[in-house]
Image (cartoon, helix red, strand yellow):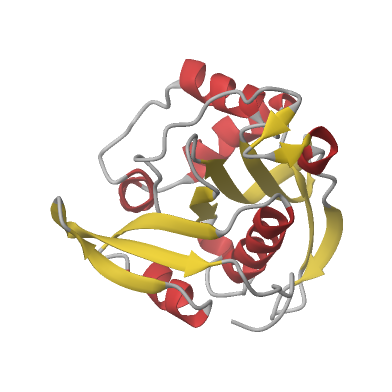
Length: 206
């Protein structure tokens, strides 16, 4: 639903990540969630083993969805970059995937990512949900889990860059407590920011 471009990610020192002790970045999210329409999905940490399913997910996205997500026209994903990003987790950020059973095992129908800034306790988010799950509360659930885990990992602020025309994502961000201001470098983009000072409930209506 949006795209992160401005936070530079890196594979963090395994001993410390943004001042957090090494055990702080051992993310262990694995839970079932029930959407508004009653469908049940499993949410867990992403891993390098998800590469093939994430590629399938990209293939299911419409051209418009890809544009909203990546903020440019992309027909072929950069798999080298994607592998490097997946390999950097969880030291350099948080990756979540929402899965459902499928003929080949599972399908990934939603994903969320928070990439840690190098120089401050802040992270940049991105999330994407299959069209068939839009409006059912999946993006909200993923964002709440992402915010709660980012806070646990020592992040004090979360931000994201969203196209001004991506109204569904902007409405969700506002419901979740994000401010939205124009990017001074690009009027077609809104910068969504939220302090993570207060405790965040991982699930709830939005």
